[in-house]
Amino acid sequence: MRAKPIAVLGLGGMGAGMACALLDAGANVTAWNRSPEKAVSVGKAGATIAATPAEAVAGADVVLLSLADEAAVEQVLFGELDGRLRPGTIVVDTSTVTPTFAVHADKRLAEVGVRRVEACVMGNPAMAATGALRVFAAGEEAAVEEVREVLATIGQDVRHLGPTGNASALKLAFNLMLGVHIMGLAEAVRFVEAMGIDRSVLLDVFDNSGWRSPVLSFRAQFMRGQRYRPAAFRATLMHKDLSLAGEEAREHGADLPLTARAIEAYAAVLAAGHGDDDAAIVAESRLRGEGGAGVS
Image (cartoon, rainbow, N blue to C red):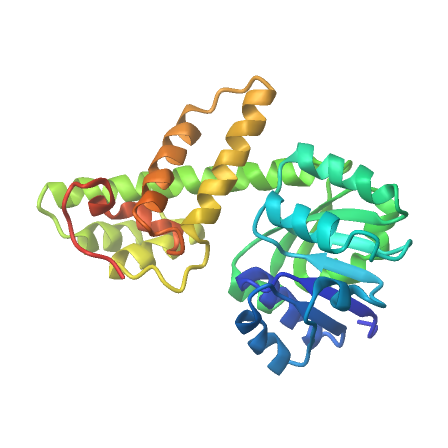
């Protein structure tokens, strides 16, 4: 791709991966993360590391956000970058937020001449680093086309879904399915263990059955070894996304009982101090005071 100046704000697993994919494609990347230690690997890969978001976006044509939640987007985009984004800049926001928040963010940026492309991504950090994500884009079609090269660099499949909010809704729907499916596998693990059967028996059979799926098999590996770090998708983020889906559903009159149960389960995980572990940790019965093996 052309060596256009791109700012990447947020260098968690996904943000760092996308920054590396852009660097590998020849982009001129300036990156920032609130915790400087997470920026080290991206700096070694060739990015210029900025001390502040304002420093990162100075001169950037495209600003790619990969932030944890709506509060972080609000603080960075509308707080630390207030008045710092040049008219004509395009913000590519990969953060998972509600459709309602996305629409409001678009309007607020438009008031200062900045366009926002909603670019919800599906995949894991390893896929992000190799440009193999799936990207659901929404917003003004002309803006999406203008950053098409950036989107195609981070994703092997890029789809424009129409107006702002559509991509966020689809992303929350997929994460809702992920959370509920992980809960199902977790309960199967706890059930067989209650019956006196080692979890490896279930997981071995599962991995060679019609129930297998790439997503669940990935989580099964965490459950098999009872090792949940480094996390591919932290439990705190799963709880956040399920909660966002639940809130948006209530506002639109949709009943999501399974999601509500999953939210409760992940709330227990967070209360037990395991928010930074992979979401698969919901399989561990001791987090509910039911006994069972320890985790790491």
